[in-house]
Amino acid sequence: MLPVGAQSSLTGGATPRGDVVISTRALNAIGAVKKDGATGGTVRADAGVPLSALQRALTPSGYYYPPVPTYDGAFLGGTISTNAAGAATFKYGSARRWVERLTVVLADGAILDLKRGDVTASPDGSLELEPPGAAPIRIPVPGYTMPDVAKLSAGYYARPGMDLVDLFVGSEGTLGFIVDATVRVIPRPRACAVLVRCTSDVQAVALTAALRNDAVASWRGEGPLDVSAVEFMDHRALAVVPDDAFACAGVKRPDAPSVMLLVQIEVAADADAALERLQQVLDACGVDADPHVAMPGDLDGAARFFELRESVPASVNAVVAAAKLTHPGVEKTAGDLVVPFDRLGESLALYRTTFERAALPYAIWGHVSDGNLHPNVVPRSWDDVERGREAILEMARAVMAMGGAPLAEHGVGRSALKQRLLRALYGDRGIDEMRAVKRALDPEWKFSPGVLFPKD
Image (cartoon, rainbow, N blue to C red; front, side, top):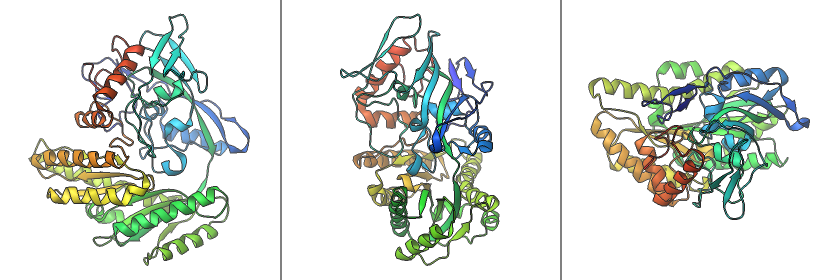
């Protein structure tokens, strides 16, 4: 049985291969917000609710669900199943942090109502589950150490004393069928969107570091510059974007080796103090190009900036599709790599050096404030794809040596390359430990067979 949502996954996890497909599309109910003081509240929603629909339902009451990936048509259940994260992970974290309660159907038909805090791992490293009307289940917690990075979608969550809810978050539909979830929400923030041109990778990393420092200070009440996200687009990525995307955004295409940052700034009241501080940070980092600003309330202006950002992957995908017409084996070849932020500059240099040593055409973009970038091969032939895969594996090994991970936000699915990266991250023993978790909850291997790892 294969649970599927919007099928927006990039890893093939929702692609049927002889499975019985169980769609969540008809599970689309959204409950009322239960307020919890001035800091937010909770809302219960079905697994098949698109995030865009959830946000629209929350808007009249002034609330917002923060951990939204770039594609807001993704379904809530699918984003929980992959522990999805988006641009603002730096401030808000990934989906796991926001899930308070889950309704899950196990492979034997038992229905679990899991509330955070009800079941936690024992000192001996196991989770004891007592399904209604069934024998207790002992679930062994894997013993591997997960990388300490801003976002991670790499197999089963494992921590001493962990919560059972967290095991299902990020399990990619292999342990149970998520029917609905209760998630935390917050008052909707007012925000500015700012496009900044930097002259080099070095300047962009330095500026991002300065913005992160100011943001953390603002969260302590020590400054006005509350940055929630910084997005990175290098000149190679921007080179394939059509002219009309720049014209629509009202910005000039930057010359090589310039890069662009898209900065999201939240403002409590008056944006002037935040923008004044932003200019001071830009000056301190030697950024001499005037930023382009969409003020709070300028939804059209902000949308044009985000459309420019989204034109990057869309344009690269179009180039890959065109190459596929003459070289049928050509396919998208990309990394989803995350490092601790203090290794960001080192990792970015690594990506460029690896691609250039292999003489591969490439483009880099991603969520730079999280240390999460997507180095993409822009293949012209099948040979580029093969050499690109090896380049991504070389980068992944180096990233893991930095304390990072090669599986940041898109999950593993049935992608042979990503399953290879998962094995590289945790080793054969780690994969066997995940199989033991799977056998405890799904001994007949009914749910999502072949996702994350093969049965044998």
